[in-house]
Amino acid sequence: MREVYLRGHGQPWVFARSVAARSALESGGLDMEALGSRSLGELLFCDQAFTRRAIEVCHYPQAWLPALNASEALWGRRSRFDRDALSILVAEVFLPSLWQVAEISGEIR
Image (tube, rainbow, N blue to C red; front, side):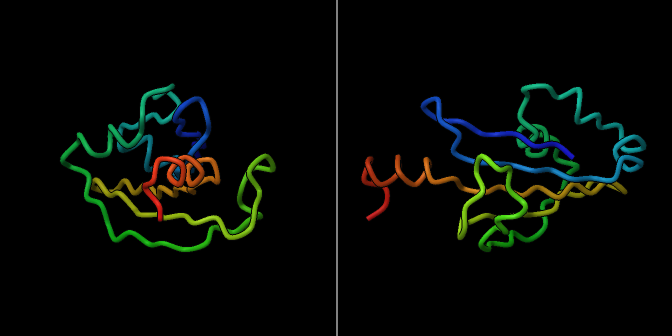
């Protein structure tokens, strides 16, 4: 499992959690710990061998969030990326700071 924050303007905008079976990662040649600060999304979208499955959208369960961001009714999305026997489930939760910036910039009306 890998958990990261995607930031904008120095604020955490998105909490992301990626999950895959260790055995599949090892046999699939992907070391998520070695990614460091490199974006997993960059890897998934640049490697054309990965296929993205359907995107699911819902309110993300508060209990699954880190205590710092635990809040009710946060929207999230998830999808699965497959490459041969390797499957990675990627969930992204949109944090209140993202919506605040969007409202200020006029992106949300």
